Length: 394
Image (cartoon, rainbow, N blue to C red; front, side, top):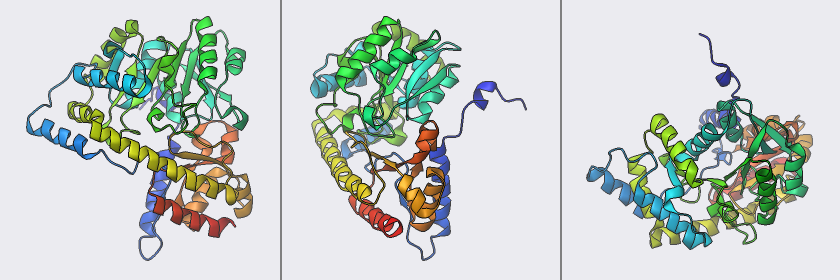
């Protein structure tokens, strides 16, 4: 059977490939061995809080499961709009918000609406692998620009200006970022957008971890810079609804009907049950719980990253958001006699029973010197993981 060229260009999602290997090793070691500690998947260990679960149950019991508008429940769009006003002091009209089947669908819709075959989208190296594959699926090309610790692993206006070429259509950024947990300084993001706008380009900003920001300097939405910036967000991370598959886009008004047409044909609508449940995310009790969880994620970061640094898994930039540690593993590779982070991740799984994600997924050859830890696990698990890694690496 002939496979379409666009599908052939999509690389495996190595995060999930490693996760499968970790699960297999965990099953093999189930008899008598220490259980595997999974620090590889970026998924909160918290689930949807009680009010959200109850709202989902009510929707099922009362039969509120019919299709919604392709743009989402009007009430949910209004709640999201109110959250921007409450949390960020921004006026984002509900008419600019499109609810989607997860942030993945939001990114796909944005790329299909704006990226032509042959267009080039600039992205930082390292960056979340699926983002570049959304560009590829729209028959564009993701061009990765190396960004090191001195730049907080983020693009700068200077680099965007230098890299812009005749095929460049725009930039796709993430703030805070997966895998680094670092954000773009708002002043720099404003300068980047000025460069993009001067070239009549598009600025897409993945803000799915914005709710999990720990530093006032960085915890601002790109939507405060300009109404022509496109923001992608999600109920998965801050709102702890990963498997519910619900996200949203904030678009310029003129793009909403374009994206709506695409959504109607590709998805019909996001999950109706998930949308009714998400209305309860914005209840006062739910928001208090989410803020308690944000403080817990910060406490985990503050314990785990200094511990990594002490054992030579150096995190060159302290994350200001999300729940990741992007660690230089050069010293650990030498210690264990392995070539790169790919081999190191399997060594840590086998010898310490700690599952991590190698840098291979996140960019060019330079990322092979890094591994990503997820700190989305409870503090006792992180403490046990540190103890195991210390025995192996010290």
